[in-house]
Length: 479
Image 1: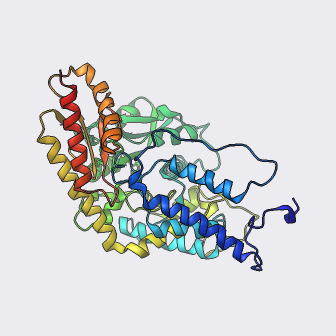
Image 2: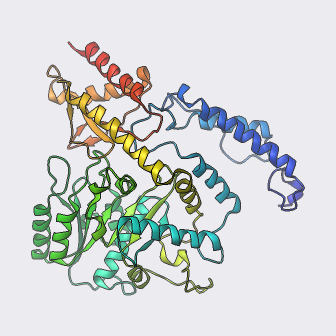
Image 3: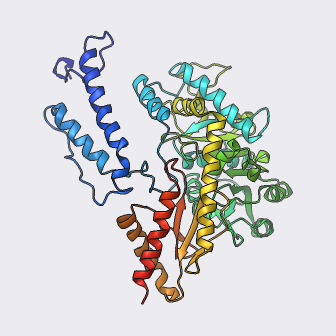
């Protein structure tokens, strides 16, 4: 395409010739966005309906006004996690600096494929992942690689675990004696089944282990499951413990699970995508005791560390194993012994510099700021937990261990087989009448209301609206 036919603001001229036009466009977009975000509480947490702007590719460039109008419509119809009443998922408003970091990373457009394509960001990622690995207590040889989400981080870790367990980095699994299997609790994240499928093992290779009343894996059941698999001629290679289950936020007993892992010489992976953030709270970090014994771990700063999506890390206790069992060299990239090319060590090749918004968030909030956010989440969790247990018409799914409270309306006047429908109506009522969004997951074959206390602007006023809405709804529904 002839660049002379492009709009004046199609690209930022490296000579600065269109600086004024670029500044006007940028200011217009930012002003519009800040106006919408600054009034986010006036919109529902989830839109009642969304207007989708015209799709397709126009023959000629649209006017700047038309494009900005369409952009405004897109934002207005999007999920609104900035609303203090958005308390239904592990999504939150991001830190301001991580939003700006995403802008800067997109603008410079470096490629994390190699050090040559991202010299500063590659070194920054090495330093930051080693720092996080140290926080996890994984040892002096630990480090990791950033990934676009926890599913990819889990896939990365399980790939290394499989290759280490069977020495199949090059030869593949076709000639193995025994079917490779791994173990996770019944409520572990479904990304494990996806990973098993992608690794050629099949989703059935993830053996579900019984949990206790609070959704924590039973070590005795794990031990029995491993023994049973061995007796059946299968080949166990990994156990995945969860630190922060998706629905209830519970933590598997990591030290006891590690004992079973050691007894059977298996790889120990901890999916701490959500719960890993507890390490930044002096008051709560002991909940993760035992994670320092992991061979690998997943951690998602995009959740409880408030980094703009996407941002996840696959951590490894021994980077030498990562190099040995996963690295695929790229002959078209220049090597550097001091800083390995990140694309040779990760599932992804081309990857944007997510590390910048992560680094900026840590610099801006510091350990103290992160700790305060986590501790305040726990304070609000206690408030909700106590209010639920104080009401006969409500029941808890499990005892909260994080900032997630899963409960449901179960009044004695509503038959058990009608309570799923009742809670579905309650969820819709809370959103439409109280501007409070809670999710409605299926847990142990029934529907529950889930509250995730992430938003830093959620306060007692929001919780009062939640419970006032529950009271009003149940009074209106009672026969």
